[in-house]
Length: 154
Image (cartoon, rainbow, N blue to C red; front, side):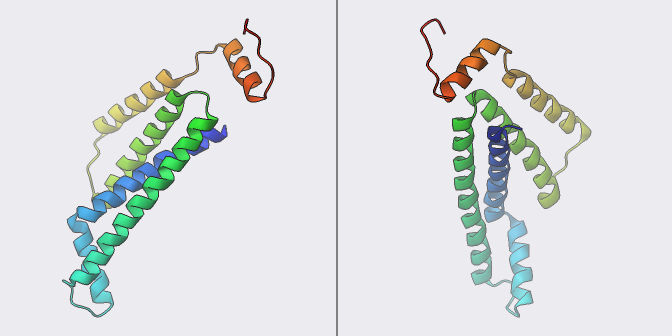
């Protein structure tokens, strides 16, 4: 597997985690989690200090994963031959993992019809991003990347 592909997949994963933590900053699920943490430490369940600390932690993780995502995405663009392919892989991995995390963390319902539609979107993205099979163009890219001379007829 190409290194750009790994970078694009991990970029999409980080984008999905970024979204997860952004949602956790504002959801009532975080209030419940904060109450449990406060009780664990012997504090009142409605301790605002704990709640703000947990929300602040999720916000910090949101920023961290956003930064990592952009770093990986930029590296994937630099190593890939097509910005379209890199974007499609990033978006597809983000899309699928976001759905799974929404189901696991927030108990969001994902009916079979949703999965069928999602599969069609990912499949369509793969078809759109598929290389055109032009071997001469690929050879030219490789020669330029290797620092070989390229003539005007190329």
